[in-house]
Image (cartoon, rainbow, N blue to C red; front, side):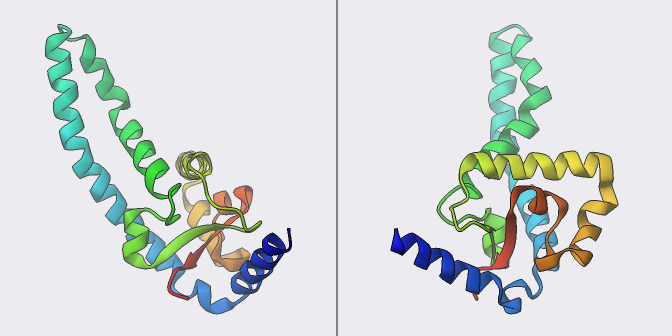
Length: 156
């Protein structure tokens, strides 16, 4: 029990240091672009598989094209952001990671909910999602605020 409290105290003191948030906004934007390039490349082999499945099922398999993009993106996020590094490949390249304020690890479900809230928020409140990071503490976006998460520099 004391180990958990100690880890929580270390995390709390680290998250209170302003240096872990330097350049996070711009790094998030570039990480987003890198991640969606990666997802676009991952779509190619899956699209070929769905095409072949469509031929085998006389066209019925082609209905999977409607969910292919979101399915590949969510599987990617589940495995990267919800994995041990708590960061997608783009986030790792930019030196940032997602952390929970309560000190727990980011699991696959939280990673997927984080992404779904990001896209739902963009569909409804496009500019407010990113503009909120100018005013909220720790440069958090609205979906970070709702989920109790924060994006930090992994090198600090």
